Amino acid sequence: MQLNGGAARASRIRASGFGRAALGQALDRGSVIKVSHGIYGLSSNGDVAQALAHGGLLTCLSAAEIYRLWTLKQAARLHLCRSHPVSGQGVTEHGRPRHERHAWLPVAGLADVLLHSLQCLPELESLVLVQSAVGRGDISLDFLYAKATGRRNGKVRAVLDQLIPRADSLLEVLANTHFARAGLRVRRHVFIPGVGEVDFLVEECLVVETDGRTHFEPKSVKRDQRRNNRSTLGGYLVLRYYYDDVVFAPDEMVAEVLAVLELWRRGKFNGFPNVNA
Image 1: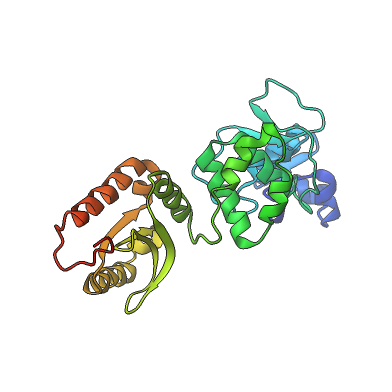
Image 2: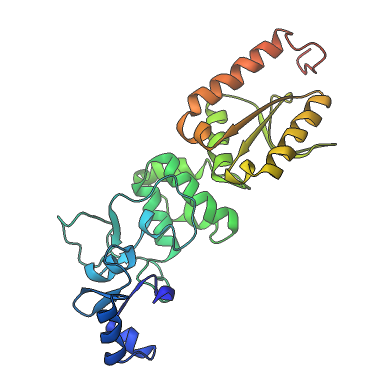
């Protein structure tokens, strides 16, 4: 049942080789529960179980985990595709599916999931979700643009315009967006001799790194500090930001970057390169 997202219809369970007796024993042990008529699961609260119970396909944010897409938060409501939507059930309806569905789970196809996210979610939430799929090559950006024509899809195209060719984490996507909105001149994934590749080089003088959870491991902390030292020896300023900074305090992050750049322009860092000189 794990392979089916934690829930399945009785017919699928029987087709997998588990008869009525085996299913009854699992129910008696409590290892499986009855979600609704003909539907069984490891938990009644799982999204797959709820999709089966509601007769729909998971989509938008509710399908993100299935497709291993980046997200900023978990879905507070169940997002479903259904041919015959029913209102008033604590469900966000996305209409009937338009593209090929998931091969075996009650989940909409990736194309529908992404398009629904672009139409439904706030800008930055949909941006990181779509970036992860496009960046991996799971779907083409041209395809999404082709599906977002017309005046009513202006918001969708505005998000697609912010996608970048490569992003190693959702933090890079968000930081890039915030820097662009601040009017900063930024280069991404720049190789600096003696340092390696850095996330951002801002105004050709300031290295900005965005660090996820793995950077808190002792070996990673030491490596990052040594990279900071080598960047400084190479004549660059360095700022480093973490998940909470980029996701929850982006205005403060941008303000610090701007403040450091202003100090640099005023000559407060003697010996550092000034490309405007």
